[in-house]
Length: 198
Ligand SMILES: [Zn+2]
Image (cartoon, rainbow, N blue to C red; front, side, top):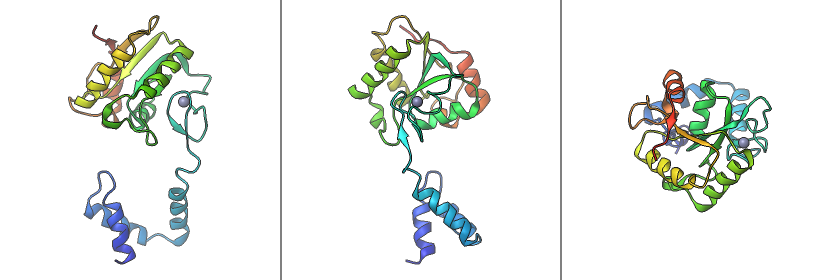
């Protein structure tokens, strides 16, 4: 296999890329000079080297605690529970929320089959105990898996008193993931959040 074919094969397995897009990217890269390609190669080679899982919230970052947990300007009395790093990124990029997060699954510790392990539940409860937040927002996607996670969370959070527990109001197209929600929709669903059903 030629280097062009080999790279195309690898790229076409990337999320949202098919053979045609993979080929386009390879031809795009062929037009770049060696310096740019080395820079890109270095970024990929070092991507995981300096990353840590935040011991407070489960986010992935170059620092532990992560930049959100250690930011003194964040509202430490509101905690938003998200399913994964992608949802975390969606909220952060939309700049609509100033509280803290708890990330249930990550690339290094994925939320397999959307089941929350005992370990993961204990990690969440320790975080809540430490913060004693006024409000806990369950920000799962309006998908079947997201709903299952929401119900497991409601169970896990039963012993938590003293915190108002809310969920996002959707807004979001049913079956749509938070990761792909546009800023306006995400903002509306956060603004209109309501208490979880008993
Ligand atoms: Zn953190």
